[in-house]
Amino acid sequence: MRVRCSQGIQVQEYHGNFCKRIPTDIDLAAIDCDKTLMVTLKHDDKLQDGSECAFQCALLYTTVYGQRRIRVTNLSLPCTNNLSNLFRLADLDSQFVCFLKQAASEIPSNPPLVIQDQVTNFCINILLSYRKFCATVSSSGQLILPEALKLLPLYTLALIKSTGLKPDGRIDDRSFWINYVSSVSTPLAIPLVHPRMFAIHDLDSQEAIGSHVPPALPLSSESVHDNGVYLLENGQDVSIYIGNSVNPDILQKLFGVSSVAEIPTQYVLEQYDNPLSKKLNDVVNEIRRQRCSFLRLKLCKKGDPSGMLFFSYLVEDKVPAGACKYRSRFKARKVGVLLDTCFWDQQLTLIYLLKASWPLCNVRIPMPAPVRTALPLGG
Image (cartoon, rainbow, N blue to C red; front, side, top):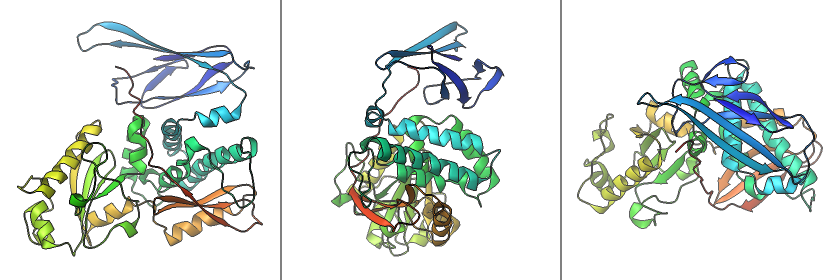
C-alpha cells in the first residue's frame, strides 16, 4: 500500500501492523474493513488559501479467489489559513485515534509516564491554541473549549489511565494492548479506553436510546451501588457486575438463582420468561450487533479479582495517589493545563490551571451525549 500527496505535503510516517521494506510502501498480510492504518503527513511547502490538496491511497492486493486487483481511494480537501474553521470541523473520533496509535507506537521505547506526559501535552497544546488564536472571550475564570472537541480532555484522561499506559500494568496485557491498538478501527477506539456502562437492575424503568440500549452511566464508582447489577462494554468484552445486596427477586429474573453465591463464574447468558431478562438479552445482542466481533461475556462479583477488573474501567474516579502524581507534573506549566476530568450530573467538570501562580478555577459546563460516527475502511 502506498499513500501519495500533492505538492506541499508528504508522507512522514505510517502507523499500524505491517511490514515496511522500502520507505514509500508498506506490506500487509491481510486487511479488512475493521482495520485502520494511520499516516502522518508533513507540511513542507507553502499552501495557498482556498486551493485544493489531493491525497491518494493505492492498495495492491489478491482476493480470496486469487485475483490481483488495485483499489484506489482519492481525496481532495480545501486549504485554509483560518484556525477557527479547523477547530469547528475537527473530527473528535479521528483525532483520538491518532492519540491512541501514537501512544501505542511509543510504548516499546519510552516509559509509560513519559508517554502520559506526551499525550497530555498534545491535548494541552490543542486547547491552548484554540484559546489563544480562536477564542473571542478569554477571561481568566472562564474555561473555553472548541465545540467539536469538548470531550477530548475526558478521553485523554481515560487514555492516561488505560491498560497500555499504566506504570504498574502487566507486560502481557500491555503487549496485547499495543497490538490491538495498532490496527483498531475508529468506532472502537474510544470504547477501548472509555467504555459504556449501563444499569441492568432497573431496565424496566429506563427508556432505551435507539434500539434497546439504555442511557449510559458515568464511569465512576459513585454510579455503582451494592444493590445493583451493571453492564460494561469496551468493544471487546461485555462485563456484568453483581453487587452483594441485590434483591433476590432481580437475581431470579436475570440469572435464575436467589443469591449471588449461586451464580457460576463461567456463566452463559440465558433468557427467562420475564420482561427484565428479555431486555437484558436485547441490550447484549444490540451491543454485539454494533461491534465488529462477537463480544465475550464476563461475570464480575464484588470482592474477587473479576470485581477489581470491573472497577479498573471506571476511569472517571479520582485516585488520590494518581491525582497527586498528575498534579505535581502539571504545576510546572506556565500555560493552560488540564488537571482532571470527571462527570457529575451529566456535566463535565474541568479543573483548569491558567498560570502556575493563578488560583484554580473549577468550571462546570453542560455536556451533550457524544455522537458516534462509524468510518469503515473499504467496502
